[in-house]
Length: 389
Ligand code: C2E
Ligand code: SIN
Ligand code: SIN
Ligand code: FE
Ligand code: FE
Image 1 (cartoon, rainbow, N blue to C red):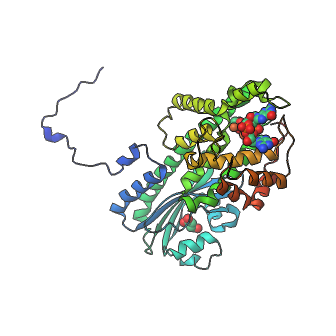
Image 2: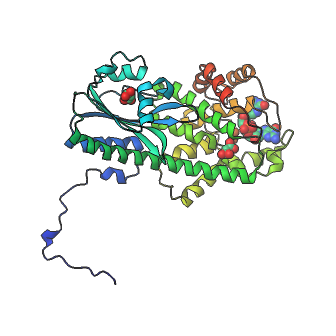
């Protein structure tokens, strides 16, 4: 039976004077701003909360990375990552699968880890830390910090469980949008090029080279951890437009003819078109951070001296994320075997990057990668070319 609309007896039965304190969660804004709006809302009830922060976990490398935060004063931990294995107190939380309450952070006063020290220096006295799980798999922490001692009493904790899980769901929502996209692209890629030279290891390395560069230049460009994480997640998709390129060009053993090169060069713009249509199909076209992905696909072959494609943009006309990925891409292309070339040594690849710096590639991004040679080698050891692709 259809529900009948009943007119209210008195207009006063409807009250609209209450303003939804979390209304900004309805908006298409970065995750960090959503967290800030949650922080404001809970401060009305729990004024002692000075900082909320989220760190996410990369299980492939056992790294815990700072991600988003809302801090009253200065953010004590930026662009920070640490192996979970080195953070024994946090490891304990994951093992017990329970939130941890510390009502006097002085117990960490002599902590040796950088994160314990920074948290102390900032003057936080107590904390509530909730481990985040999805289908029983650990994926990060939510931290609530207060400068007062003994504020997380039983009455308050009940609310922090709820708020902590709300934040965890926001993070899952954001991350799973990206993961769905990555999985879709990967399937499309595997179906069109069942045995391409660009393997899973390429994707893992691309992400991590790009992250190294972004972290290194972060202070100069005021990059936050959310941006860095998006560059990390999106960089492997730079070449998704190659799906549209026929195998006889993509897999060609020798040099491309002029005509083939022209076709090949359409892959950056095609990539952006593919992304746009996938975003539509997944209802993600209003996903705020998606321009980072679109810029990476479209502009990763632009050159700072204006000789690149598709648009011949120059210098800072090229979005930073595309300049970062360009360096990671060329370095990985040089040091990997391709149907058309052998793998170069790191030594020769660095020398080539230096030659390209200021012409094809952004100098600052090149220097950032070269400043991290040890990390680069670690990534290469960890993600070796898998034979099965
Ligand atoms: P890719 O193999 O992923 O290479 C990405 C970029 O790395 C290239 O963009 C180029 O800037 C750099 N790169 C790769 N190998 C070399 C090299 O030996 N020397 C130098 N100086 N740079 C190198 P580019 O040139 O726009 O090429 C885009 C894509 O076109 C390549 O992606 C590859 O799939 C294809 N491609 C380029 N040249 C050839 C070729 O001679 N033969 C074939 N079969 N494919 C090619
Ligand atoms: C943090 O709040 O970011 C880490 C501090 C801790 O080890 O609890
Ligand atoms: C993929 O996700 O497999 C496509 C990305 C690439 O070709 O680099
Ligand atoms: Fe490309
Ligand atoms: Fe590539």
